[in-house]
Image (cartoon, rainbow, N blue to C red; front, side):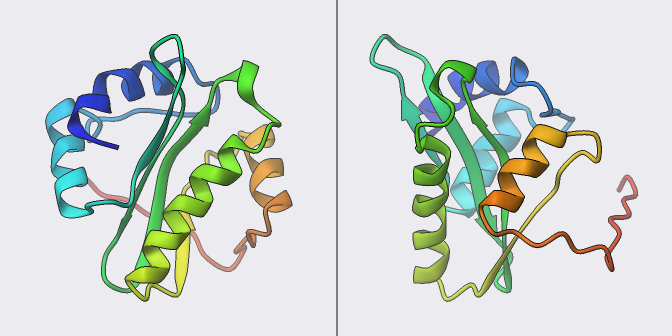
Length: 133
């Protein structure tokens, strides 16, 4: 993913059910994220323009983090999400990052089914807390 892909990625993410954008999802903030995590995020361009899929990936030196994995409804169940994940995991492995985390809305049943099918563990022993800076 490059800075040039950000507008199309935002368009995809805005129309993907179960995915939420926040104040950290401005074009400027996303460009900063890409700069801090070069070569980890990726897109799947659609032949007619726009994107079939996109995912943000980064790390903090200890753990990887995925944000906003999305594939257009028409392209789902064709292995595209798995290909995007494989790209991200190859990059994380090259950086010797042993584990990756995701954040999932608790009411996103379709997303949860996908992640569990892909071998992700539901960490019921952890809870995410957040506070504005």
